[in-house]
Image 1 (cartoon, rainbow, N blue to C red):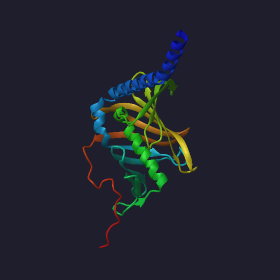
Image 2 (image 1 turned 180 degrees about the vertical axis):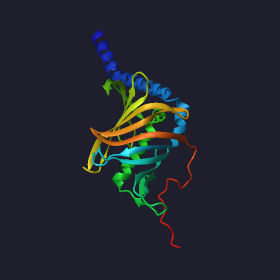
Image 3 (image 1 turned 45 degrees about the vertical axis):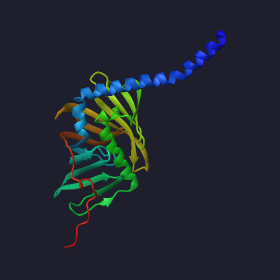
Image 4 (image 1 turned 90 degrees about the vertical axis):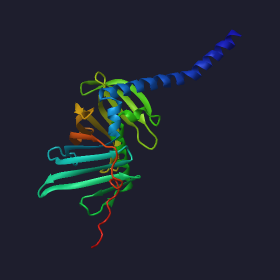
Length: 262
């Protein structure tokens, strides 16, 4: 009788153990996110930035050439993760060449002609833009408290001489992302994610790093953002302003129409 009871007890323990471990991991993940939210100014401040505009200047590196980057002024606009638009004004002879890209209803567009319509992005580029918009959205941290996201804690590790705590983030219809937070201060310091490498027609792991945190409005955000693919620099941005928005005009994210003939 005792042996039968022992077998049943062990079986019950094995059945309940995964649920207990998942509950513990979920609690630790939520604790990590909540600490980061407080470090970045609190939930109310970050929620206001889920719909927002932000401006900055940066350097775009092409083909891994770090000797001749392209300087630009940029402005970005997002309404959660499904409406996204940004413009880069590249400095050059004859003034600034604007390149504007947008994403709406699963489709992307791009134009280099002011008030002259736009071209549809190929599906692969539109998907990359969708993932980029989602990464910006997740970087505001408060969405991670929603049930749409599955969070898995990772072991403590070290990068660039900083101890960091990791979090694997999953949501349906999006690629997994890995967020890393400063162990002491709680700041979001890295996001690792796979992006489409158009040159090699495959996916590549890209690291986005966040540095020089300062107050921007009500939130504390990184002023310096860099993106690297391995040792290859892709992009550097110095943020100058972040502005929450209550809404955007209805046609703001739509593909610009071709001009009508006079």
